[in-house]
Every structure is written in structure tokens, then in C-alpha cells.
Length: 251
Figure 1 (cartoon, helix red, strand yellow):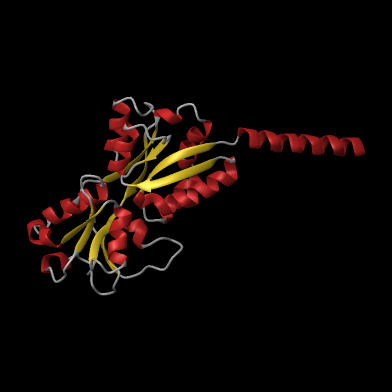
Figure 2 (tube, rainbow, N blue to C red; figure 1 turned 30 degrees about the vertical axis):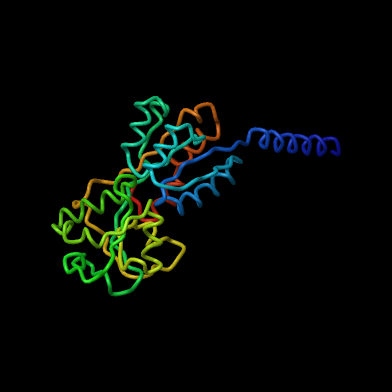
């Protein structure tokens, strides 16, 4: 019996050492709107796989430029579906690995209660000094905000009031600190599942802007990295999907 116990213990120790040996690290470029849900996904992924996902957050447009210039990212979680496809066409992403991991929702948000009404009529009234949005040339949520203003016929009226952030995280910061009374941000930022919702907001009807389909891509630098492939597979699983959905994204 003692021999069997020793053998079992040795086998367990061997299994553990093998798991550690096979554990890897993956460098991930994450769209700023997806920072909070990815933090939870990365933690669960590490627990279940042993792999570590190291995330850098920012605007999809800047990531595109950085990847073209040789940045060491292995996986891209973009805020659109165009950038991953472009990288694939240019030979910087692995073909056949791209997929939509979330569909984003745009909101008009104020950190103060009662500022934004449930129909977004505050935009046409214009009784505010600053409206924040992410740079539409770099951030899909910013481009969506421009589409909404044009669809409502208020873009030219509001142009002098616009304040641009480099990405959706900086845009959120402008509004949360009061530097802008309201702004276009992601629903995931305004109503996270683990924090009380603050202020007032209007969930912009999807018909007013092009669908924000957020695609994942396996970049060429991650093609031979088992941890990169494992992360993309994990994103398609039920646990990751539950986290994504809890932040207000559609699947």
C-alpha cells in the first residue's frame, strides 16, 4: 500500500510539473471597451489552462499601426471586424482563425443623473458645453457616435462641442471626471455586472449606426504559440461567453 501511495504521489507530481512545463504566455492587444470583461476572462483562462494572457488595451486603429510596425502582439481583440480582416489580407494575421467574439452596444452617457434622457433628445437641445467621443479615425465606437449624430441631423450643430479621446477608455474618463457633461461610450463601461451603475444614459438604437462587430484574430507572431490558440478557443467557450454577455454585449 505504501508503494502504491508513493507511486500515486509521484504520478501527481509529474503531472503537475508537466502542466507547468506546458504553460505559456500570450501577448494580447485588447480594444479599450473590452478591458474589463477580458480581465475576468484572462483570470479564468489562467486558472483552467495554466496559460497567462498579458493584455495591453488601446484603440484598434493604433493597434493596427503598431502591429504593422512589428509590435509583439500575438492575438488581437479588435473593436471592429475590418481591422482583423485587413491584417489577414496583408499577411499579418493567420487566415481562417478570425471570428466575432462580441457585438458592442453604443450608449450616450453622463456621470450625472437626469442629464441624458431615455430618447437621446439632449443631443438636439444642445444644453451642454462638451460632448466626448473616441477618435472616429481610430476607434469604431467613435465612428459609431459620428454616425448617430449625422442620422439625427445634429452633427454640424454639435461639432464645436466635441472633445476627442484617443480611445473609448479616455472618452469615458472625460465624462466621469466632468470634463465633458456627456459622451458616447460602450455599454460595457457604464453598466458592468460587478459595480453599481452611475449617472444617466441612453442605449442608442442599433438602427442608427453600423453594427459594431468585434473580431478576434490570431496574429502571425502567435501562430506557433499554443497559449494563443488556447485563448482563442477559450473565448468561444460557454464560460467566456457568459462573462461577455454579462457586460451587455450581444453574442
